[in-house]
Length: 303
Image 1 (tube, helix red, strand yellow):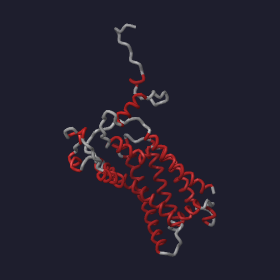
Image 2 (spheres, one colour):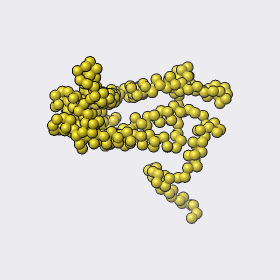
Image 3 (cartoon, helix red, strand yellow):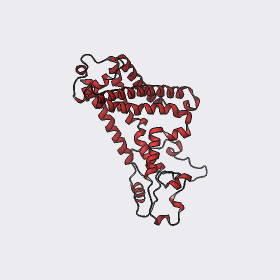
Image 4 (cartoon, one colour):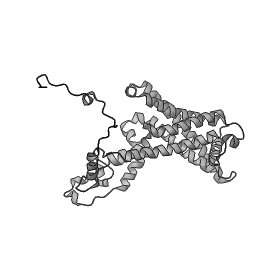
């Protein structure tokens, strides 16, 4: 029963910590936007050459149009294909995309497990769901393992990445790779079937001990996999891997934001609120020595 409760706690923690991180970002003060073009919010014509509404005469008196179509296209290109990494770091993209695509497959695998656990066996729908579950699970395990090991090797042995790699990044990759690898080993040691996944879901949604649903002892490798998966569910929203939350603000509130600071506008109000906000005595201070140390008096300066 402890394993069943652990799965629920891990799932709730992942959702809760992700929401908390989202609220943290949303309550931060006015950002320092980039004002770099092209951005997808502009018209298709201006987007082609990096234009802006500010090129037009009396732009401040004209109605501005939000290019939702282009925004959605750009969003999905980045979410599904990590487009900017492909353009700027093509050699790095292949392994990174393998890891991310494996995570997308793992999400699909989880959804299919929930569906398959409660569809009566013996009909065509159950067969299709099981086949899709098998494909998604294997793709997730293989791609996460390959991507994780590949990125780990790059950060450990390739100089251009090694010089700025931190211990936390090594730990993150080891943790993710361990989840993918133990997932594959669990599948292999349980008869090359994802029936164990259906049993996990049944145990969770019926609040039953896993051993009872499995009809005996829970496979050792599955216990290891559940513990690692639960740990990563706790850890991801609290670490730098929570960029799945931060990307929304990075793009919509920094890179793409070109709202003008007009009198009486929301931008002006945000700036005034930030300027009038009392200084937080507990806020982190800049670590630069010249910021924290008082300047030495000049030789001829009077005391």
